[in-house]
Image 1 (cartoon, helix red, strand yellow):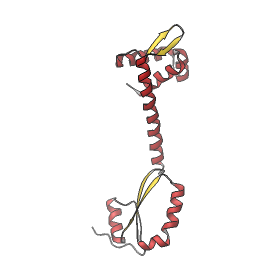
Image 2 (cartoon, one colour):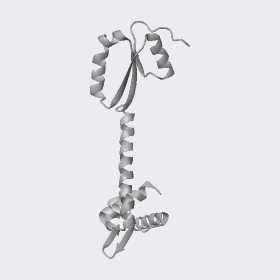
Image 3 (tube, one colour):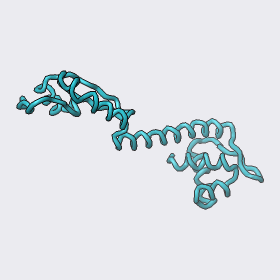
Image 4 (tube, one colour):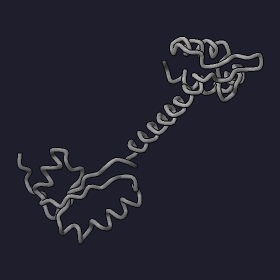
Length: 155
């Protein structure tokens, strides 16, 4: 089963007619009919009753279409979530800092970041400079705020 089969079934249910559904999907009617028939064969149930004036979902079709809408809605959310994460608009950011940075620069920087990226979860860790460097190197911190020259990393 392919995603297009799900989209085809939903379009057919929405338009209640093979010709109108095919036009809405931008395909010809014979391939749509063949794909719906193949989907019904794969599922082992008839999804639509064909009438002289169009089609309507069977009870099995209604059950299938309800879940199909959910699947496609979740897929749309997954695509949106991936795009947001790719732009750095969601996810988490682990930041190490020295206590002195908390009073000096960190509040202003964090406020500006929160304004620009409200969906990103910030994890703040107060750590000595040497431990921040180690955490940056081992990947457990994404950024660090230290004062003075960075200490030599212990490796």
